[in-house]
Length: 278
Image (cartoon, rainbow, N blue to C red; front, side, top):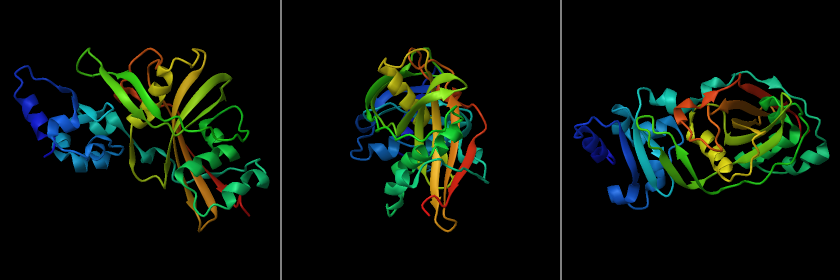
């Protein structure tokens, strides 16, 4: 198997080491051109399928940027490092938007609503704001993506030395406003399709750490990672949005993130828009 050598080296360590240091995948394995499919694993089943030997031995893979990875021992990989879509209610509640037909016209002529356009539509109608529990559900335009290269630290659960991330991070969109009277920046990870899978916690935490590492977010602004799963049901002429918010149990401006500590903070919502283009 691809990373069985890592396991052998860990097993031969007389100190019983429970983690593997930051390593470049191509240099370690000699495999070229396949780093993303072995390192950039966003779903639990992908991890199990691609690295069954790691899963069987309770070792999880951290993505650390520029093709680098590390391994950490885990007693429950699914619970510690992934979010299950089963958190979302199966039955949705209808949301009536205050957006005008003029505001929504550009969405109505698109042949297919993609992941990005679904996020933009959710913000333009206010349904995402409602799902997040913001004080105002006023429709707003979607800001641009903020993809880039970022440096930040990640907790090693088995050693005081931190793992250093240095590489590309995708940031789907951000939303700024008030929740419970407090200024809040929501950093949103969006996925298209009905809830049926899992999401790696690094997809929620890394965008927050990336933005916070720039040093431009004031201390009075709360930073909240959010997961939005959206899809169009053409049969029922409806568009659905499942929304959940999380807490990282750290101040990302000056503290490393412990991925296993990323936790759900409130009851996830399932809202839908009905006949909005009619």
